[in-house]
Image 1 (tube, rainbow, N blue to C red):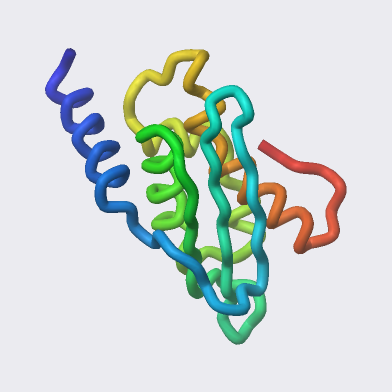
Image 2 (image 1 turned 180 degrees about the vertical axis):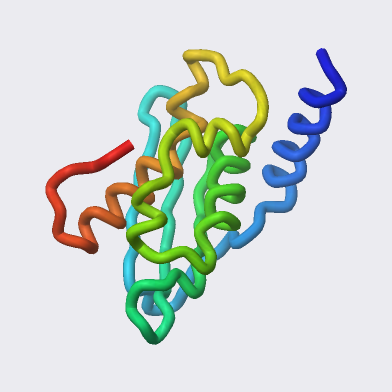
Length: 134
């Protein structure tokens, strides 16, 4: 294992043990939940927009599951603050996997992408769109 991979494993463990933006937002503007039925991971994401109605002012998540799913949600929420809804909708699976920084096995991909799936459901539901881009 390279020093680079070790560093990212430490980042994942840090986000798992000390998740950023963990908790709830009172009266969020948008909220979505999802789970991975294969392993039991659960993630819910709540968003509050700034006065312009487009910029993500605050985002929180809560849930339970493996280190990969919870670290991924923590990393994603850090990235979302300050983005517009349109920019948030452009985040894709390669972006999320890149943030994790390590090779994710096929069995763990759904864990890593659960928070993105929840974000897309909420973002496209809020916008009234029918498609979920990835």
